[in-house]
Length: 169
Figure 1 (tube, helix red, strand yellow):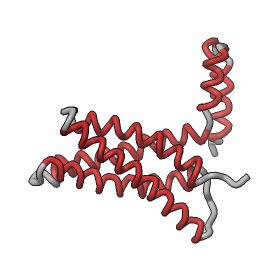
Figure 2: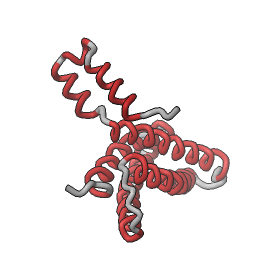
Figure 3: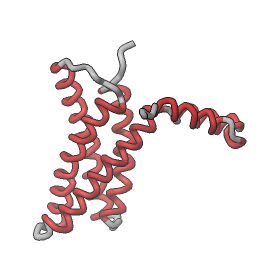
Figure 4: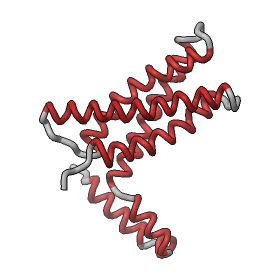
């Protein structure tokens, strides 16, 4: 028996929009703007990407690079976690979230390079932010990592949606 995810999603949305809370115009507008299949899938895979990133960061910083100084440990752990997470994110974003199923090698390479450039940009923001908050504001490295992962998710969605996997009109 095949489960039609889109059908289930549409039924769920219809149910939610018939509840009392979404009869309030502002809440209805917010819900209908942000509750679509693409955003939900992006959030799901964003959370999975973040978990992969965080788990890799934890293992590397706590068990692998323990003999390095704090800044090198954090930077190297974040870099390797970033590479692993970006590979996972590209595949899931391209194929599942934004449905870019074009098999054209040239287009896929362009998407991959654009994706990597956008992720490098947000990686630099994340790494700089983590180092800044850990060393200057004395925020724990895991709290800082969580804060900057949230910032990365939002920026990465905007880059992917508006620049990398945008659909031609």
